[in-house]
Image 1: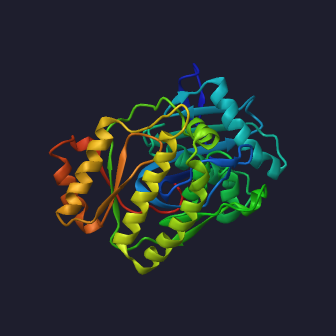
Image 2: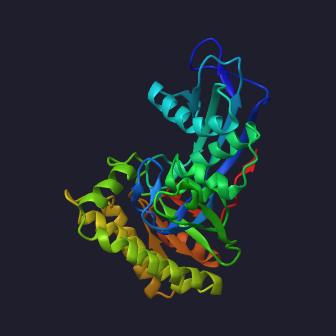
Length: 340
């Protein structure tokens, strides 16, 4: 953790007394989470299933100390606005209340994920912050319980507390404790993702806004929970059988159904860009050529291609014809958060 010295933009390191430092990886949902039934508690309309990725992560350090006058929050070395500090402070309050303390906190995060570009930067960010708070305040919560806390910062963060394939359970009504994540499968077989970053700029409509607009106005949304339940059952069976093709087909179709609910919203919207559609067409072409690959997209223009690890380099080489090297990132299954 760092604190200001001569100005608000300069730092000096502090010893980690009353603090902790964690790295958490992002995750990409294969069966999507899209919409909340309870905004305050971040309770989802449906269950979901994701794959944690090693290539994208957040490093976060926290220190609680009576020597601090107020909460502070630095992101990528920059002191954040009062609004952002207050947002992080409200989340940390969940842990302070459980620990029965009112100590101010200093948070420093380095985000190795493009922010607000549909690459789940908030998932790794709040997962790392949750782990650090749990450790620093000596709360000793197990990952299952901790996932119900991480969820309150970002829904998808609940899944970044585990490695491999992770299931986030919808839970029951307004029962917060019943909506938690748990490890499903280690993903220690022939699996990878090629992330094609067609645009890393911050999106115009946040996921939170997009979800609620879709939930409130899309006539297709009422069918969404039924489709997710069906897709989740099929993909879990496919994963356990290590049936890559069925897993990929279900994941791709689930993503397209989610985006269809957005297109049918009022007003209609989409996170797709022309380049997103081009990548989809390339994936379809590669499948015709005999390669096992399937696309998925979240609330952003970037496309994630689920593929076999043994074919990932070959698929990346194909895409080098159309995109720069820095736009093409191979990710393997990632681990649970860990101390750094």
